[in-house]
Length: 132
Image 1 (spheres, rainbow, N blue to C red):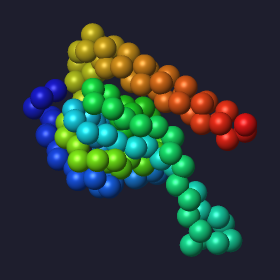
Image 2 (spheres, rainbow, N blue to C red; image 1 turned 120 degrees about the vertical axis):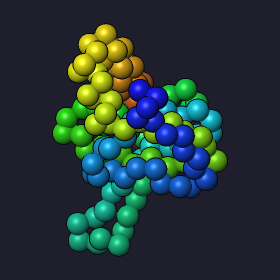
Image 3 (tube, rainbow, N blue to C red; image 1 turned 60 degrees about the vertical axis):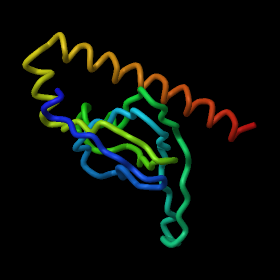
């Protein structure tokens, strides 16, 4: 996996990935922080754009999970909330490795599932707060 990874430095506010774009990499945050958010634009007022925070990534966590799940399109945008260090893993190569080594693939997908469950719980909290 290391052969298909690169270290990335991101300044605060740097957009790392954008919702609805192809998911070309899986990221591991090693230092700093990353916010996940959705964008909303009103149909009749395209200049009216809102962002909704839907998750916070802490060191040791992965994001851009769509890189491992078809149709491989990002479901949220990611932006560094402060200066950060990340490991960027090429998604195509990682998927190939997972197919070639089922044990590794299982371990990777366990981490993906865990992260998705955490994101779902965070989203539920956000929804509950919005309805309160």
